[in-house]
Amino acid sequence: MADPEARARLTDHLVQGLYAVGREDAAAVLVEQIVELANAVTDPEQRNWAMVDLASRLATLGRRAPDARLSQRARAVAESPTDPLHRARALAYVATQLAPAGQHDEATRLLERAVHIHPHHTSWRHDGTVVIAVVRVMAAVGRYEDAVATADAAADEDLRPLAHRLIARSLAHAGRHGAALRLAHSITDPWWCATALADVAHGHATAGDRQGATATAQQALDIGRVRYDTHEHVSVLAALAQHLVSTGRHSRAEPLARQASEITLAQQRVDALTAAATAWLAVGQREPAADLIRRATERIHTTAAQHERETALASVVEALVAAEQYEKAATTAHTITDPRTQVDALENVAEGLTAAGRLEEAGPLLRRAVELSEDDGQSADGLLRAYLAGARFEEAVDLVGSLAFPEEVALGLAEVARSIALHGHRAEATQLVAQALDAVRDVGNLSYEARAQTAVVAALVANAQPEDALRLARSLTAHPGQQARALASVAAGYGPTPQGRSLLAEALAIGKPLAVVAEIAKVEPAALESLADYLQADVAADLAQPGHPTQPPSTPPLPQAE
Image (cartoon, rainbow, N blue to C red; front, side, top):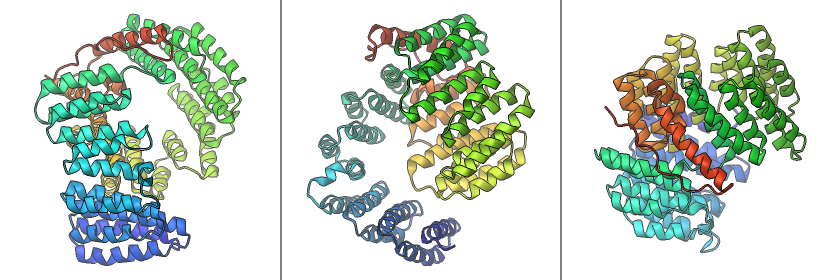
């Protein structure tokens, strides 16, 4: 293996494996080899990035092992990039790992180095990585007022709501719920305000205060459910309409389809038009759906930007598949020139044909999707989806094994395991789940790690391992959004049982119901009617003042755990 970066990543995996079996001394030798390999990268820019990545990985492993030698080596590596910006970021990454491990003084010292190492004294405030690191460490050591002042002084105004949310989460974890709640309410961005309130709700739940958790989560829902993106809003209406129909609530679904149509006709966006069309199709109204698809097709011809036109064509393909117009959908998919977008469109048509029992027609489309993915060479995502859609599991596993980054491997293995489990191959799925969990341990980024673990939960549920899935879901305490999705997935596995309802209520206390509509339909279908009520309230607000939704009335109470 000639590439130093690839060799470094492979050696890094060996180090983590040695630590896992208690071979720290042998691992220490390999650590030095990793540093040498990173130093051997000839391109200066790539070498700097390799050092930043290595410092972050060593610091993460040093915190988890735990091993002070690794943390010390991470600090030394962080000082090695020749470019000041890279060096500052590496020091910031290491500091964010030291603070949770209780090494507050050293974390603070490294942040001071990161701040002052910049070419100009105040330029660090323009570096989002360093600003967020400073905020996180200050909050971790209890310097909340300093953390807020740092967030307020960030040069990027868009960064401030995220920083305030992180401080609110730290306050909530420390049990200072009142202060966390006040800070959350001070965030002007609705999304980050709602997210911060969800963190506070999670803090209440962790402390055993179910009433406080539910009340605060209710506030988060009241703010977070005001939707600013037309396509997202209409898509949610369409999805909810489909689930209402599937659970025998047709009369409640039709008003949602009508409201979705009214919203999208006012703005004439292609993606929203096609989403509204699927809502009409869900309630069996093919004529208004056809009219919206026609309008969407006409809008494509007036779209100047190539990327927007390609995305619009993919939206039309999706609507045509929903309308069971497979030949027209395939023809439209073939007109897309961007390989990735065409792969998604072809897979969409193939899946529709497969569901309709027309496997012979689906085969050529899947083969073409695989060819495009292989030729594109830019991303393995499309190729993996094509392999799974065609039940080509051996090739899917081989593809995942060739991926470079642990988070990609973990997510890929989880997706393959879930697909194999749904095809009834439980033994093979169990092996892949175990491999996915091993890959998760190698992920250095905590957000990616939580996302991968959530995917593993879904695979365990598909493989009829709900107890294992629940244990993993409960471990995601630092990531409320991912934990909510994971708990909802487990709840769906249990179905309409006391256990399923209890887990669903727990998920809704820390997450957004619109993200788990499918799971709600499986566990508590009657709750879909409450969702329909407040979504229609949002619609009325959107129509009253286009582009600036008014604050809707309070949402219906969340279901309580049994």
